[in-house]
Figure 1 (spheres, rainbow, N blue to C red):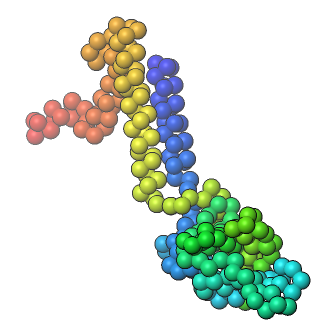
Figure 2 (cartoon, one colour):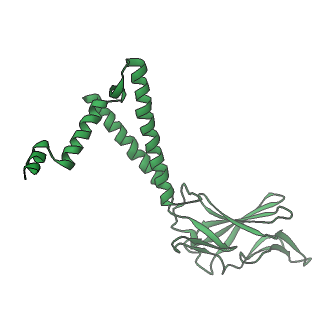
Length: 232
């Protein structure tokens, strides 16, 4: 009897733990609607960089011009006047990890320009700032954008998708796998090691039978109640 209760408690714990793991998904997810705007499903906590028009001094007489809604990011040389294209992009992606990153790329020379959005509660719209320009490779540059638009977002263990239906799918799939392993694996073990046959092959069949009878009595009533009903 104690072993049956132990198995029941273990199964209950496993199911609860799997539910917590499967449903503990990040609450933030956005999808690009343009090269400078990422919209959430419920239209809240949107990231809209359409008003951003910033420059960053990266060297003597050299400034970086960053405007998310245009298709060109350039470095302007203040002495010789010509500008250098950092990215003439055709695609924009958003990557969510512990930070939000706008990734600008193109199909021509494989240049990539990454803008890492860093939370700064003081950097409200109009007060954003660029920092930490870095040449990662000859074709990739990164820069940090201090903004309040990503403040308060739970980005830990972020997912590319945050669907409740997908969470429940994972949960029920896990439950089905556990049930399959328990009943089928237990039946095989009982048949091969203990030479059980028929209903005795089912793991803890006495417990499950008694559980079934208890549920049946709760839902349908006792035999005494059934006899009284028939007499009426």
